[in-house]
Length: 479
Image 1 (spheres, rainbow, N blue to C red):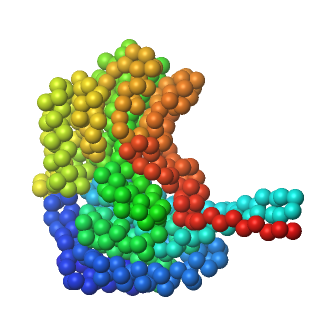
Image 2 (cartoon, one colour):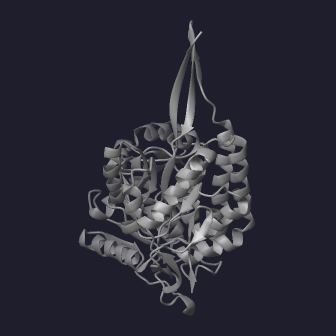
């Protein structure tokens, strides 16, 4: 059985303690590789390598750093099929989704920041007797911790701007989905990334994750994951006065107005609700529909969602694959049971999906649609992170906005209407870091990405990411 390796100082290494944990394929519920259970000893090696590499890397020209990132992007594209299969095996998501979304986006992340750093300009301010200019300088050794739902996609989203800005990175992928990060290590070696600039440590959050966060030599932390973990990272980082960027959970509303293009809206919201088995922080999970079209929307939405095929992620005919793990599968099921206790009515989802022989032991759930719950119910308030959505009706726009904002989260919202005046008005009132109008998941990598309230702190993407990974210094020169 293959043993995944850490990437330290430009080389692949076994964990110093010799300890490994199982890496499971959730579609068949079988172990297919072993993951290092890294600890402080591995972290110290990575930190020493990063600190040694930082002076050289931070002083390389922008053009040199850009060229290496472009080369990494090209190698990702070149190895798309292998990476996509690894992502499918690790996560249980449909192979075609990894081929068309996850891996192309990982390459795009590297290429975007390879270009963006060449456009990251400094400022100057002229006075009558002096001139001020600013320097955006790399911070030093930073940590990038990424989640399991979009493994290489979000891994590169973090490390690309950090490297482009001249930092050295200690990166930790999720222990549930480590394989593409391991393959990425090999790509970095092939691309000629200097030793120590990027170090990838595998293992659990309770061991190597905590060690990274508690290490004072880490000058900034970029984290995507659960809200409670984000709060812990913030509490540990605050006394160190270091930068943190936290992209956390979501409980995203979709407001559907009576004047919407109903057929198009339903099709797009089925995708927004159930893509990647609903395991995307941006998925719509609370659908808030104007009362005059509620019954018509409900009928069409159920009909469209029922068409989704659930099964073996290697079969191109399937729209949904496996849930990431048995633990997460049981969590989702518990919320479905809770919906009944809270007075909800299950409109779709009672029949278990039919799975082929290869995947009989996998963790599969079809789309679930629930109505009749109050907005303050736990099912409507807590992040489920699975193929479960609720339907709620409203009469007036003010009520829709109130229902949408009745959440501790504020990551992404969608508005569906033909009236742009209405769309602008609602978008202005939504307590959400991202608002899509008549669409979902259209992303320009130049735009800021992040949430409000319990959905996080800070913004990623574009120059916001480059600003996070640099310190701004003002220099004043008297004439």
